[in-house]
Length: 291
Image (tube, rainbow, N blue to C red; front, side, top):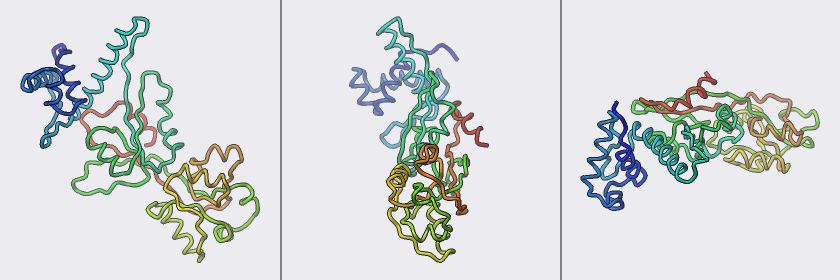
């Protein structure tokens, strides 16, 4: 590959951030055709298409997304250099992570722990619905999605799902609620319950357990956010059905405790990716740690 022409790169960078060739050309006081020629020269030099046109919209290809990451670093470093010679910008590696909005924050931190506090790594963290996050994967705006829901799979699906953790689900509450030696059936029947919503796999398992025990629990709250379940348990609203990692700090301090009974429930966590010609090198060691 011949040397990079940074003027071509800057034109590409401007269009990539604007998302519109006509608007960028007007802002740069160039003709649209002249701007297109500059970008084609950069694509020829790199040997890869950087944009693909869908209708009237320009979308980054996988190579384009990688080029944009580098361009952001290059021009940010140039700005730093112009600002002060005493602080030299270092290229930063970026990992874009999406997580289901309801997913445990503690779990997310544990997954990302190998990259935390690395000075040359930037983590971009997004939360949303599974549909939103999978769209982010498809448009190359995300490198990986963390979820406890397996994406639907069909012949047209390009998603790759890797199990990364399978954790037991516990009955968690204050020491006052769980200080005795009551049976599991008594605990479920005598205490108000803080439960995940009905679309949760954990909730489905809990409902089957109650049917098997022939009890109808009193539901204090149905919650789709693990952080809120943790807070309600701390407020002694009832017993919460969740994975211990959600409340690991409270368990360590004794603010909350686990019931001694095994409910036979588990929650599975998955990392969803998409096949790429240029996978993000930061992601491989994270996934390898869970094989």
